[in-house]
Length: 313
Length: 313
Image 1 (cartoon, helix red, strand yellow):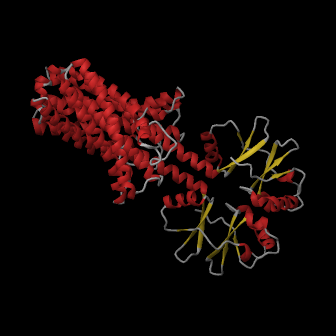
Image 2: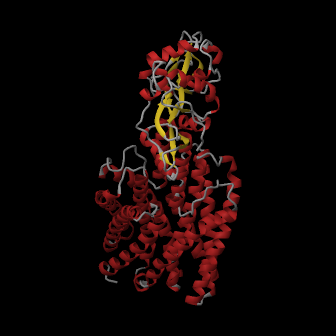
Image 3: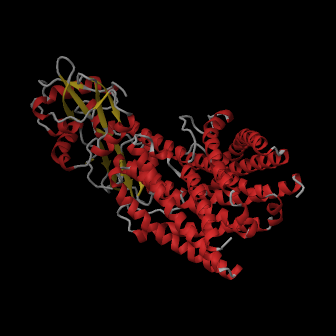
């Protein structure tokens, strides 16, 4: 924010405004939007240089000023300020205090910086990194480690649950060791499907293309996409399993697990970011790493349960 | 791009420029930056409304115009155009053809849209989605499936390699079934570490905070972070394994694998996006999904090889 703006009075003429701009404008951040203040410095109108240049020079400012003022409050969140620029397609915004007194202006180049910082923060959160304002090389090794270790630890502890579940099915993979070889494929595919959905939803929420009230509309879309994608992946796996191992029960087990995992991953990828938003948390934390960990646990559970049933282990 | 700009001649006075702006300015996108053209409409100077308002009215345009013009070519990539706004902190850019004739202007609000589109594209690519210009709800179920299935298939086929490697170690996990339960934790941790590094590098490259010539500087940083983070994760795992299973060899196997996996994941997360950039590919494709799949294969290989050695299986 800067206070380098031109202030005018409502009883000035356009010619007097030109004189004032010529006298004090050289030091100002912008002269293209001038603010009309009353005696107690309250903001009562806005005049652009365009209004001035297009008006006759003997007109009074109060006759050409716009009293329908878009302004932001000193306490406003900077992300809201950035969005206001986008919404109204303006290049400068007046900042007023609680009594509507003009305290400064913010310009659109500040807004671009805020938008980019916000995007960077989302990228970082979505990759399980605690966001930081420092650039990559300016952050020390210890700083980088600190920003990454917390989520890594949390996710590692959660993925141990999946490991714990696997030990419960020792008998199953003792009988059919081949089952183990499908774990990476199921985990990766589940993770990738969840990552796709959560990224689209998180980005849609950030760009305000998706609202939390659309949750069922989005979920219904994700479920249909999941069925479609899940069936294709299941068929390709089935073909491969039958060619390689000639085992129809294994093909069915892997196929059902895949479809169930993809549906679960895409549903969670859709619901969790929207739930976070509803709870006033940042949707970006409900991204790939967290969803992958949850889906992993479920897919392993589904896989071994179906295997035990279908393959009579 | 629009051609709604005010064009001036170099021999006009400031007063004449004001008259022209007053006459034609009402329909123009901007009157704050006026372009001075010669007889063949070549761009020879730029005059801002600020220059005009601060100058005496009998001055000639050629005496106040800026001949040091920042312009873009009609053939320029829109991402470059967007970056030019950011670089020079300007709100409007003239677009010229090959003969330096002014054909139009682009304004900063177009640039913000381009920046946001570019960010969305990166988010999508980094989540293994083929980018699209349509919004989430405007894209059909079939459209969504089409944009997601290609990468899912590719990654699924790659993760089968990891599965194939696991079948080679049937004897190892037949002897020690507990080994299998560490696979999810190793895969997830490797994936998360790779995701963290690749996201920071991809974003750093996009924001031009990191250059491809910095590859060794970045790699050296990532390796040190990896050693630090890997040792912490290994120690926590070792404590848990000794408490739960009282098996020092297992603790050593898991610990060494973790440190090696984290180092590999962070190195690949650093090198691959920079290599892509060097090869004029989009670094965003070298993100979490692809790196996770590569790291999975390696971590399983490392894990079973170390297990066979350390645990005498």
